[in-house]
Image (cartoon, rainbow, N blue to C red; front, side, top):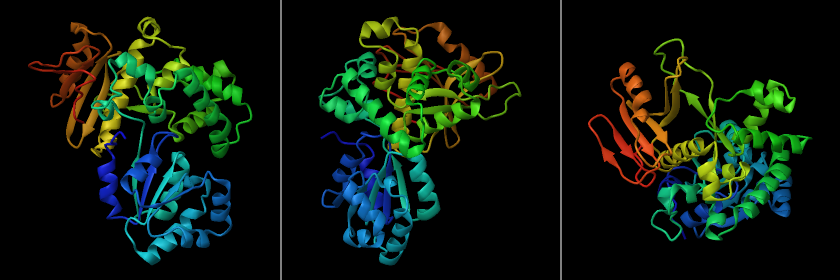
Length: 383
């Protein structure tokens, strides 16, 4: 079994809170992590119709049946259960009594905020990180192979072909999960929306352009993207908020939470396809940002991620704030270092002299230079 970096922190906080909540995409390993941390806990899955009906019709009876160490999977299927959890955990006052999981972030967070604030330790579990795979038999040989394979545990461990895995993943997501979040009647149009987003990875989110292609208004486009974020298909990278001047780009960028899914949507099947694809640089950029984000989440560093661009097209791919520390990172898929990589970093340094400057590239050799640190996927900076 592959050890998850989040496990030790989850275990630690089961001793300090009555409830531990784990959100994340479907099939990211939430159940496996929960059972790994607490192997002796009872287990109930609210995807199971009979258990779901029990929890809906008789929530007090359900929580009296399942108590003193229970994993409740996909709890967002019974939103009313959150209020009853508040009551019973306040009465019993037992730390670590429940581990709850859910794959709909919006529904989970809404209920937790309303009912369980102060009683729950909240975690997000994304699919495997490169760091988690590094010392296993599943370690990718290159960033290209890693991008093509994606990071979902079942796909990697069972060695499922991308076409088989992601076709079924999307079908399940679109036909079932979306109906839980919002009643979208034209599922084919929504799938086209996801496809169009994949072609814009690493670009500014332009709802007007997307709306014109799909004949939808901006309100619908924004609503649909929010659904993708809530179910961990995509995420946005916000522009850096420091007001160095008034001519900064204020629109967010689009990224995906699994690079394998992104490659599948783009029709990339082989390393040759990836090498020749117009979005190769953006795919690598997405991969690196996602890996750094996973590491930050798994290590609970509370880092904040941004990009920076001004109206004159000066830009830095990634800005990471950790406390008072600021890291400016340029991300390039090339396997060799080119002097042009330093242009945006040099400009940013002039307006924020306290920034650490880094480059992450597709090559194999880490370097420490006078003003820069150069990293590879296999040795990323700690953020």
